Image 1 (cartoon, one colour):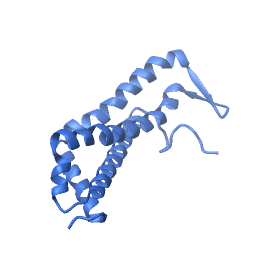
Image 2 (cartoon, rainbow, N blue to C red):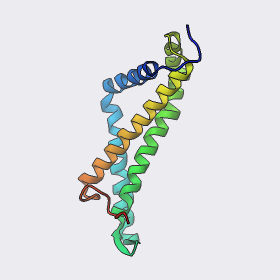
Image 3 (cartoon, rainbow, N blue to C red):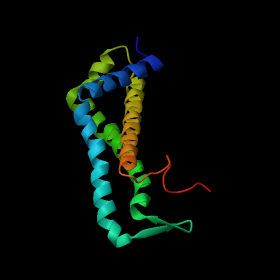
Image 4 (cartoon, rainbow, N blue to C red):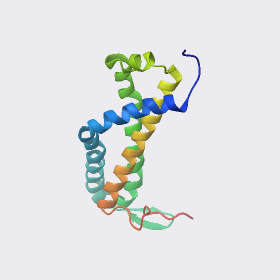
Length: 151
């Protein structure tokens, strides 16, 4: 019987379903979070770096590339989570019929919604992690932290 209840198992089931689909299509899903920060960091970083030069932050001169890297990590999280939560869930709801299939199982609407929300957050974490790894490989982050110091 479906009611207005939420179980962790129901939310996990929806999340797990999306994770399995992600596993099967990992190459296509992996290319955008890796290529997007490379294109942005190269385009904005190396393109605008000669024009901007250095940025002064807390009295310290920082190269524009190192200034840009933390923002690109944030953009990676934002873009991945937003596109998954908005566009992909809309496609699953309207065209693929995934929500209809999930709701015929003993899952409530709230469980499906929270599972989608958790999956979007997980994709954001993956996008931010991959962007951070690109920034580390390209040398924009040193000593395990970004260029700035916490005061």
